[in-house]
Length: 321
Image 1 (cartoon, rainbow, N blue to C red):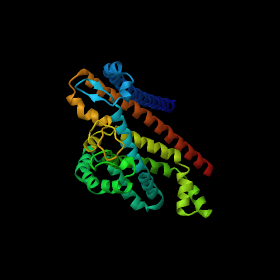
Image 2 (image 1 turned 135 degrees about the horizontal axis):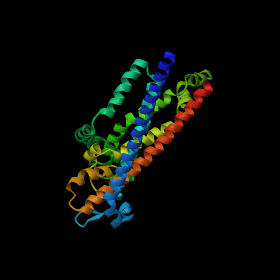
Image 3 (image 1 turned 30 degrees about the vertical axis):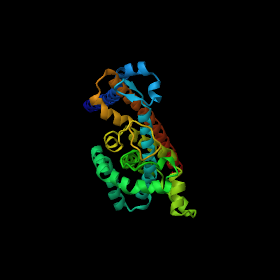
Image 4 (image 1 turned 135 degrees about the vertical axis):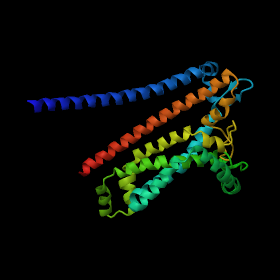
């Protein structure tokens, strides 16, 4: 009887510990969700004067005049979108190539070393990227790359104009380097979920190494790859310090990638400390509110794609078994 009593007490204590652990996790999740909601409410309240005064005109107006207290965010939205698209265009093939090399081609010892070095790119502070962009990347672009692009692709409006060095192209390249670890690490995890028998089956049917990677790996994980790319895009949209240091910070819309521009994050970093009127502060906060909304939507879409990618790969694993 004593043994049964002790066993019941232990089970009751274990059950109580499970309940405590469950509620701690649940309350933590609710608290984080509440913090996100409160941040959004705070930004909305602080931006309310600008929202009431400018309305939807704030999103499609190009005027940014602190002297007259007239503000429009279209140039910074344009600069954010263009610099992020440049980054995604460069980073996507590079990240997928790195992930394929590390999972399908490289030996295990080399894969660990290179994978560690790639992930270290994410640990470098943003301001260090900005300094490297100012003193190394921007002069190289101004001296060699942009004149070359202008002479060979100058018939396109994207490669016209004087070579500034700093501008949307420089910001896009910096962002591409910064988001490559994010995209490649997610792609690596997704590629690892493909069962080995699927690769061996493709090779047994006469496929080459590249055909095997194309059919068995890339085609099976395209939704997960799409989610990783969208997640990298969300990371690029919100980057502040490095972009602020290399984009030129000019409130203007230009088709040329060589031209200086500004982003939603960079204009907040540049002007918030110097904002002298309540309307100026409200306009900057409204830009932050728009950036939060865009980032939230993009990250949500990415999570949906990634979860679907893992679901499909799990189905492949089950079928292989």
